[in-house]
Picture 1 (cartoon, rainbow, N blue to C red):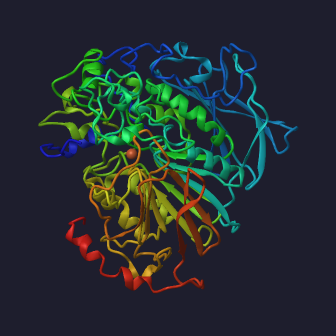
Picture 2 (cartoon, helix red, strand yellow):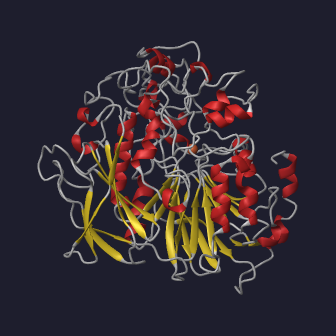
Picture 3 (cartoon, helix red, strand yellow):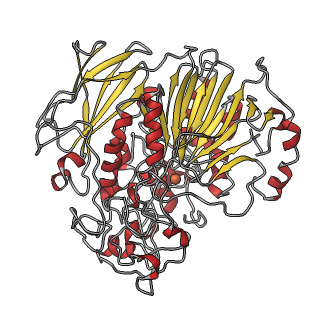
Length: 638
Ligand SMILES: [Fe+2]
């Protein structure tokens, strides 16, 4: 990420740059000069592939078409909560010729109600006219069923329209109303994608069958932007390469050309039992070579889950654009900026304009989901909240819309007296802002997201929802120390502590890491640590931090940059894939479990108990962790 130094801004420029509408349009002041359809496969750079080398992956559509050659089809169905209701989101390759419609009711054979919604679309690359009908989504339909009874099963059917096949009669269950004290369990996922996520997927489906209420996915959803990884040469510190068609494809046992840069023996490791082929392995890959097809693949695959239970999402860095960075020799710069296949460029020069317009500024993310930002005073899919029984859940945007956000708004690229950045001053991940910025971009209070968070926290009725859980894609604390963590702490931590958020969840780092409850200066609140697996909540003083970035994904696990975790870390797992389960048992006890994808076993567990609650547990651990903070301070992490 480019340093922010040298960027001088005037207040007047800021006011000019900050948008007032829902979202910033994709900017096209400079032309896109790459291939009409970028394909991450040098051996066969056609959309359909040649059947050799890179396997073209297929997942069944949400609705099985009636005939062998459908002209249109419902490929994805997703449920999400809106206050007192449900949003039914479904996707088709082509339009429906009318407003999207759902027939519904409280009995499977009496779907007497009909609701209609609206359709979004965007100019995706390639369009669905060039992709198999059952594997492509370009029209995104949202039908809301408001004012439903809480905790009630409803049945619905999506009727046939413009060539689609009618869905079966399906069902969903509405959220429990805030204040319902019935125990419930929900799932938390981060950093999933398709590769390495087979175990997580299997255990998540099993949990959904066994009564999981809903799932909450904290960003890095499909890893669509890793489409190009197969055309990048390998590096030992970056496992994403070798898609089975790369000109750098290695051969087993050293039988390949001598210049193959294989210097990491882990590429030869066999895959875990039950996992699908890994792009980091030497024998083939399992990503699509098209950005949009990775989205289609992941969403089709996930439909088994997302049509069974509500699936709440937020954005991560992998949702921003078609690429984040280039590899050795800069083949992506040559390809996207100059349409040179299998070439090199002297420098990395990916800009905002390197991606096709439809693959910038979170466009796919904005269209392919429907979260309740509008209904909760937040911002579309970017920040919003929702209640379920005893808990209030807050989704935040860790990529844009706070001071020093990882994705830059254009005004942070400006030099001198410019009012718009030049092409070469922009970055491929530039995005947003999606809310207002009234005042200096360096000040929390100027941001709509911050003001919304404050208002949302202040509005919570803790007698109804005693549990408050917040999540964004990026952690505030991690043993993989990075500067963005300080920016996130500066943006939100004091508000969250002031209003008594019980736990802050994140992903981004591809491992599982549980911290002790932490105070405002990042020290352990030792008095709240009853034992290694039991913490007291401590409103106004500390909250628990969990990094849960191990659902899967093509980039594989993160590894500890040094041999020791930070002293604030209670547990670190760098080897298992899986997801988190949060069980809210009553107003004073909630238990978090790390579920391993490989066999469903629990890898870690922590119970949170409300301070002052009359609950018996073994104690004495607080003294053990006292004094650990001194090393934390030595690291200069604050
Ligand atoms: Fe991430």
